[in-house]
Length: 514
Image 1 (cartoon, rainbow, N blue to C red):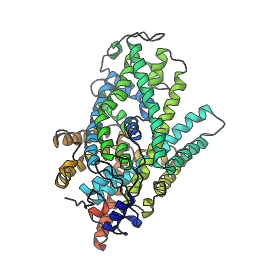
Image 2: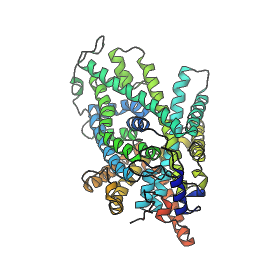
Image 3: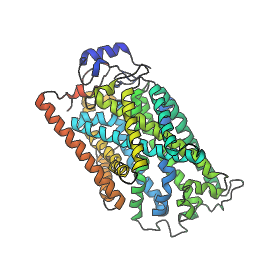
């Protein structure tokens, strides 16, 4: 369902053409059957199948395929508990985010909710930090994809492939949100089918019933036959947590995308309810297969191809390395595609609230924020350039200074949900179609878990650098936001909560901060 012009005109009249909630006087809503959202001119071009596949595949990144070997080597079979702990943390965070997104679908998602619940400074800060995280990811993924493509066609240099990949996906995002959804549908579909096939084939080989398998099929013996389940002690579980936590980033993308869907509330509810089995199958299931096919200390697990290639080779599947390269490239392109989409929508939301240049809210005839997309991709190109020119200095700083942002985002979601629950109940209790379990106790427990991971990272050399640099960047952004807010209050230009975060309900009533 596309945006409805009659509602747009009414919302524009209510807010006024010059308000931060209606930059440039162009605003519209895209109401689903069960609720409304603050699309602000974005087109509701994502179909239910797009949202379903984004939800399923969004949590599967290239890090799962290429980075799991290091975690297995560090913790042995106990890495399963590391994945389970982080997976539980993500399930809780997604449940909290789903509660808020189902009640108030928004292109700004948790940044818009933080704006309403915690203050303008919070929405500004976490929004820009999240944008920064994803534009750095663009450079990382573009470089990773270029390396694979250069291996296949060496006539084109690596920088050339990075440029081609970025241009193609930029064009896709600029065309329409439906183009992004279609690309992501197929990218995510390939990942889902690949992991599903890997789990099924691997389990058949584990029990010795796969025809033609080269694996001895020892059942679950490899979980304990090489130094036991905890070969490096119980503390290795926490070491494993640090190594796998960032491979889960991206599960929250569906709540941003839902703002451009035909039925945001239904999409968010479905995605939130399915996150448990998604993590269970794709993460725990696939790593379990690797650990049962091979001893955890097998040297091939940490070889260049990674743990999945080693597992496929143990079964005797020919050309396992190239098959996995295709899947990893798909994961990389999917991450690039979603990263550009996510960064641009966050930039759009920031512009809509007056926290970014007003030009970011300009929407094309196709319903996409072109300036926000181009601004995000330009920074991505710059970061790619830094990666080639100064990989160990400038780019490493960018990488480290955005490394812990994922955990900061999850913390903000938790604190926001603590306050937003009461706001939603006072506004309209019927909007609480998704509820966080055992509120507020499980919310506080999740905050404690995330905080513990951040503190524990300080004991790790690589983790310490990421936390400290990320804290430095976060402090600078928060400091700027607070100073900006003081200046706006002094000048009388600070937008109210309802103007800064438009929330068009069926009656177009303004939402006030409690």
